[in-house]
Each structure stands twice: as structure tokens, then as C-alpha cells.
Image 1: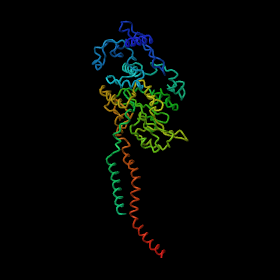
Image 2: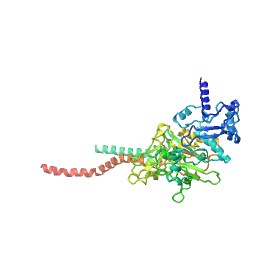
Image 3: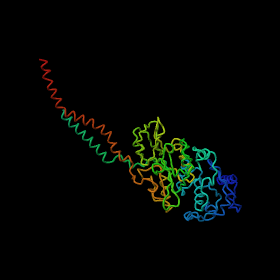
Image 4: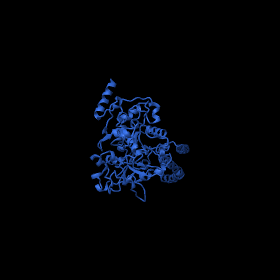
Length: 171
Length: 314
């Protein structure tokens, strides 16, 4: 029953983001682009060019051990060496969107056998994974290189036309 | 009869003084042993993750409804701003948190250090405040009540991290201003502070302070070479709710590494603890001395009075 529900949720997720995340497992085409917009508030969603990144990195560079390719971190291989492809490979299937909510912290603490006690949240996972690699490979690293800031974001940063010192002062 | 009461009085006063002296020398106040509230929350600042985007400054400004900054929060010129002959930016009445950039010799990337109130377990500001404007909440926040602040600025001198700022711009009601851990709007409702929530790199990790200490040491162990083997704020001054991990020695990022482990209050607690005892015992003691010293004179006076009375009777 629980399995069925999980499959259903997973299916809904795949449909929602318009990609076949399980495609690799089924030998189907990998997604051309993935729209990363579940956290968008001050920036518009990011259309991630999956096809482009397939050419510059292995699956395991981002997906750890979940695509069937061996993990690149020997420390992970201690447990995940024999791990097969997993049904779910999306970042948010493991990395929580709200890693510091009272509920999440409580559940984490109650799970005394949990090994990954210092697991990144979704936003941290995206940025550390993307930005870390971009820095190492000399790819763009500015916020606005990937993100289109929206009006709420301009207000927050007091930037652009909303700068307190006027548009000329901001860069 | 009067001899016995005098002896009793002297014995009692000696016992009182001895008890006071003993309790002082035995260090019964034990401030250094306090580790803060068991469920106190904290934030682990991992400076190896910070990219200097200053989103935290922007989020703090919005959450605390602070005035608009001189420069936009995405303006990198802020890192070059200095005052008083080259000092980096500090917290002000309009900015409860500030990120500064440090160019370190031998490091490819600059290191960014976020500063805000560290929310000490034993806050020096709280100790120094004579109107009790400060409180340490069970959630870990060091709160400030500007309703009772008289603007003496003693806390600004007392704070070992130079955090409390002053609203010099206010002509009629200048008060102290500082980070309050978003206690009223977030912390007490089980939410992380605004700066933590917005941080894209998760350079700020929010959680129970005791769990964060474990996580921090785990990070040091799991990533050899990435961190210096020190968690700043774990032990400093009796511990702080906000703690830092760094890839370079803390002195190079202008952290004060000479603070020691003793809370500031340990330097004054013995003395201040003696004040009530002095107030309770000394009046009684010296009144007793006075009575003893003047007893004979008083008695003589009585005897001197008698003959007159007897004379009157005659």
C-alpha cells in the first residue's frame, strides 16, 4: 500500500516536472531540460539544460549513487558500492525543501539510526553542487548568471530600479 | 544577662562572616559550568561554504524592517567599504548582520565572514546591563528590550564581539540595536532565522546547539584539510549559540582568539554575589559593634541620671 502510494507520488512528480526521471532505468531518453522552480521566490525558476551538462559531467557527479553509476566519493562506496539504479533520482527526493523546520529537525533527531545526520537541504544541495562545479570548471558563478531575479527579489536586495541610491548606484 | 547576649551576638556575627567568606572562596556560583539551556538553538556558520552573496543581509533587513541601505545588497562595492582607517564594516542600527571579505595569502578564493550577535550562553551585555534590558531565552536568543533601555551603552563596551549598535540617528529616544535571532517573528515559532532560511549555500546550519557541535566536529573529521580543527564559539567565553568553522586560522579573519573559556561574568560574579551578603550582614555587625562600644557610656549616663531623679524625689 505504502509502496503504491510512493510510486504514485513519484509518477506525479515526474509528470509535474515534465521529465522522465526514471527514464535512465527504463532505457528511455534523458530529459533535455529540467525546470527547477520548487523554491522560487525572489528569482524565477531555472531552466536547467540537462542535455548540455550530460556532455561535461558523469551522472554520478550530481546524482551520487542513484543512477547505477558508481559514486565518485570513496567514502560513499563503503555502503553504496553495490547499489543499483534507484527509482527516484530527483534532488528533492532526498534533500528536504525545508531542512530547518521544527518538524524536520524533530523527525531527524527521533531517527537514531540515521547515518546522514548532516544532509543538505534542497537549496544547499543545488547551490553547492552546481556552484562548486562551476567554480572548479571556470563556468559562470554570478547569481544572475543562472537566475532571473523577479520584482520581489529586486525589492529584497533594494537593487535595480528599487535601489535606495537610485539605479545608477547599483551594478 | 547582657554578657551572654554579647557573646552570642559576636559568635553569630563571626559565623556569618565565615560562611560568607567560605561561599566566596569555594566558587559556589559555578558560572563556567553552565552550558546554556538544553534545548537552546544555535547556528553553525561554515565559512568554507559562504560565497559572499549577502542574501542574509538583505533578508535580515526585510525581516527586522530596517531602513534602506546606502548600497544595494547585491553591490560588491560594500566589501571595499571601510571606516576609521581601514576597519571593515560592523553591525549598525540599520544592519544587524554584515558579511565582510578577507583576502588570505595563499588562498585562491577570498573568505567571507558573517557577523551578528553570537547569542552567548553567558552574555556579557546582559551581565553589564543595570536595567535588565537583556534576557537569554530558553530557545537561545539574547533578547533586547528597548522599552527599558536608558541608553547608557555599557553593553556596547561589555560585548567581547563589538556587536550592540546604537541608534545615534534618533534625537529623542536613542537605544541599543542588535540581532535578536528573529526570536519574536520566527525562533519561538520553531522557524529558523531569516538569514539562515535565505542562505543559498547552506553556509548557515540551524539546529539544537548540542547537535550542531556534533555536526561541526563530524565535518572537521570527514573533510581532512578543509577545516582548521577548531569550532569557534563552542568553548569561547562559556560558549555561544552561533559557532564558526573556518578553512584558515581564525586570527586571519579578525576573530578574537584571546578570549579564553571563562564567561565574562566569572570576573565579576564573586564580587557582585558578595554585595547582598555585605548589605545583610554589615549593618547588623556594625550596629552590634556600635552598641557594644557605646554601652558603658550609655550605662554611665543612666547612673548619672539616677542621682538627679533621686534628688528630685527627696
